[in-house]
Length: 113
Length: 110
Image (cartoon, rainbow over all chains, first blue to last red; front, side):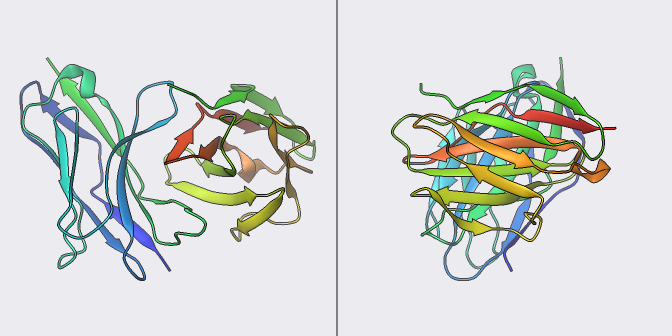
């Protein structure tokens, strides 16, 4: 079945550091890939997405490129801020009729000033 | 931006009791979902609902679980006889161009 593997956290970085959170997937067909973010006390918010190979999703300075050859969708940001502290979830959808999301375990990111 | 709402934010119940978790999806959405996240674990799909019936359910969604859209606005998840292992955060989502998630209900079974 479908699965998503994320790098384990927690991850702690200093402000303005470079961020990478690794994500790889296993899925049938050609899934759509997502990164969701969960700020403290809030629900899941879509951060970015990519629907086909070589697409790059971007939002709020975050980027991720859909790499079919390595089945990866790593999240990157060039200069993190304290406000980026949150839990980040990689996810995929492979059944387009139902759009059921399969999530990774989440990576807790803490940015220190 | 439109939002999905969930009530209550936190529910504490005793083992064996029934609980109903409530969600108000975004008004013109047609697909609805429940997910859960046990503390420290991944978010897991429970069930999807379309056209007033379940379109898919996971193996977690056994006979103790049921969903209902009792009126035009609410979408509920019922757990008939709660177990300790049902303690989790439960997220409702509805889908338009993408899935929108509610803030979650934390269920604690004692």
